[in-house]
Image 1 (cartoon, rainbow, N blue to C red):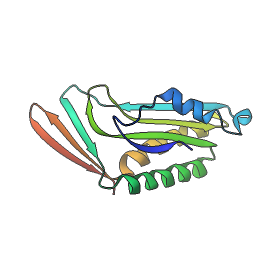
Image 2: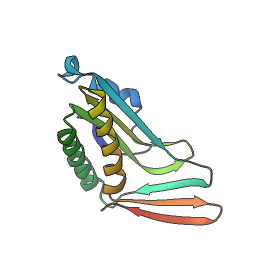
Image 3: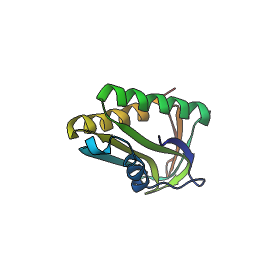
Length: 141
């Protein structure tokens, strides 16, 4: 299972790394779909963003539980995800997700559900810097 909270400059994952990990699953012969998602920093108004969590270990534990719950709820085989923390600039990857399932319908629904749960359910602090100053956004927790 590849489910991690990663400091931006400590490890580098790409969507293909998650897909390759999922293709090792013992149910690959029963698989009909892998859906992927990459979230990155929009930069039209934001110059950079600092994304932190108060306790990386606890946040990762909560992420693992969320992933397991989504797998069970949607009857998909496996979800792989990496969420970065650190300082980001326009176009930098913040979040990677890949879902392995038997059919496209439940696999797509699982991906959508996982994105929303992770976005709103994990405790993150975003400090967005723009020409207008710094805006702080708290999520989850």
